[in-house]
Image (cartoon, rainbow, N blue to C red; front, side, top):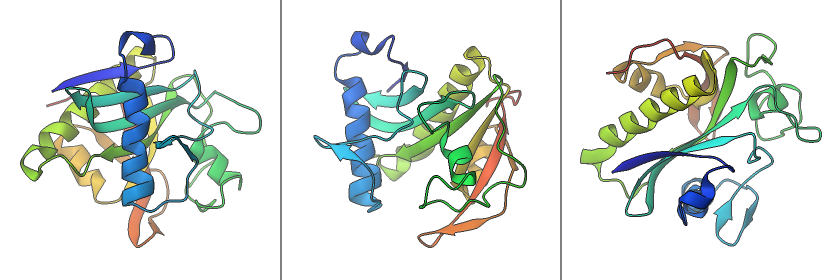
Length: 195
């Protein structure tokens, strides 16, 4: 199992891995979760997949096992900035605008984590190891990008997983229900120790 942080600057070094990430997202979010998201050629993408973002991929033999997208909170592309902020501003009808207690931050040292998934093809016995690899690489990448914290919208039960892998996930908003799943915005400190 390998872990790679992809960017527009290095994707040429990784063959099909970048496209496979978007194919895996299609399977996770469109086929499995039944979300109505932009897609083309069997790949899921949205307005936040820009050269400013990074994509953390856990993979084995070219198959994507898990992934996370990191986006700087300072980035803008047309009317969009980052998912949580845009939801708060009412630009995304699928996410309630009251997802944060405070105004969405815009700062060089804060990045957003989104499109987090673990493939349903990962056996139950391997899921914790895959999730730990994913979170560890997310922290390493975020720190290398200058982040001291990451803001993310996660299933509420994932906060416990965060503690198990050494992440300090503090609620940044109320618990909201999405398709019967309780979710919450969290601020994740990059100062936490990793196990």
